Image 1 (tube, one colour):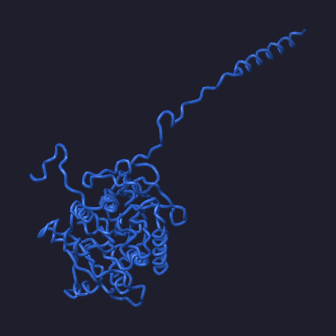
Image 2 (image 1 turned 45 degrees about the vertical axis):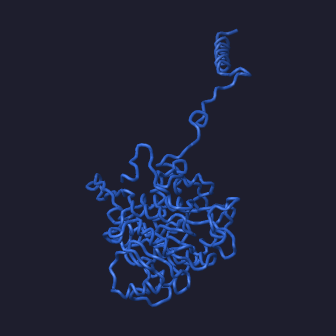
Image 3 (image 1 turned 90 degrees about the vertical axis):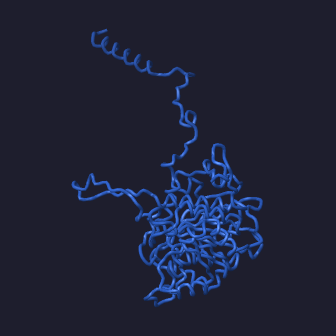
Length: 412
């Protein structure tokens, strides 16, 4: 054998040995890395992470998924082409959901309410947003009414009644789910009232707002559709027979043309409580006045975020100084539990006007600046939505109670 053949044989032997050295004998399993689930458990969403739904609750496109059932639904209605001053409330549903990120079903217990509304046996989900067209108000009004009616006529998810008098209030005796709507400007309430009227007939409205919203039109109104704005929708609703003559405003403080505005407001079916009345009469008297006014009728609650003072909720289209605090509004809402609520909304959140801070670090480099909103208004609105859900689940106002370490109530 020549030297060349010996050298080739030696190289081949070394190569074969190297190949077999990397082979795994049959029967020996490859060690697998530990999985996330086995090591850390479920993939939970942090307050700052995960898909954006209200309070991290189950999200469903309920308008297209006709199998989706619920007892209470959160529904975004991003419409803002009925505004008379500052637009931007089409981003309200996003802002309110974003403001709710620190809320969640597992931490829904409130000392003020004394319960967790998500643990009361009802199915509560986020049904997404109505895809409202921003170019045609006539079409948009129909879209909002059809969307609301679609969800209102779903069967409830629970096998038993989830709210007292629900079936008795409906014309056909069938209990319906209830919807908390996220506006959007206040015009969205007109298609909502049209949808509710088909089921319940005329309803009483508890209207938290700085403004009356019962005017008959703005200067320049030349068509039927131009009459419908966020300041006239209650007037139109009264013409259509959608509201009872037992409705009431709370928090009114806007400028008026004169006492004729009040006379017109009364003809539409409303009495009113001013923002100053809370100083003169107190929260308990306001609660009593509202409850007496609406009685045992079907009630719809509509809350314009501008009922809260703009120092505490600045992100809105028509701010008015001298409003209530968020704590005062929350306290009044708790006092209304047990009324025959058929639905509720929070409207006029326009997050672009919220407090924030500027980052000027790039200002002199690129000529631009970055703006970060503080989500003050969205957070307040999200907390009010939680109150609405708790209100729906309560048969009466929560009883003030002394907790361990707290002051006895008689000493306060």
